Image (cartoon, rainbow, N blue to C red; front, top):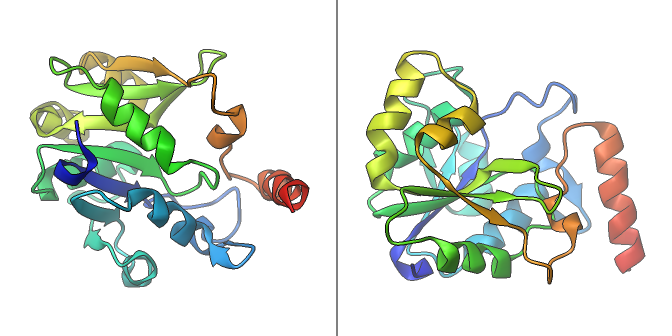
Length: 197
């Protein structure tokens, strides 16, 4: 699967309650978290941001995809992206992973079997990251049904889709999977940035 024939979508719909402010606009060094992640999408044929917030679309330069059905969390965001995209497949990332590298996105595309509907990343400890995933357009009816029936947990949905698990390759540090949910997470990320100078 090649990036130029695939969509890239950043999922920004969360309420950021634990952080206490909108995570997407948190600045890390010179740029916002959202702008850092937008760089991962370079080279993808279609670039989308799942949000109702025009400033987020402006921050990325991506096409805005509002929620079809409100308050349905990440599964609702995936449904909206699948319905809106023109591509036959999409790689999704949540908006709060500051160290996710473009090289890992490319590896996920390469690892996607021709016969699979979906692929999701897992850490080397076995923890699933169902929003770091690749979905084919053919997932749309299943995801839509989950949203419409209120089944909004991502991991069970991935199981229904028969998602292939891709373990984080050894060449990538586990730090690439760090995400920002709380002020403590933000401090941990900033300390990594300080270490890197």
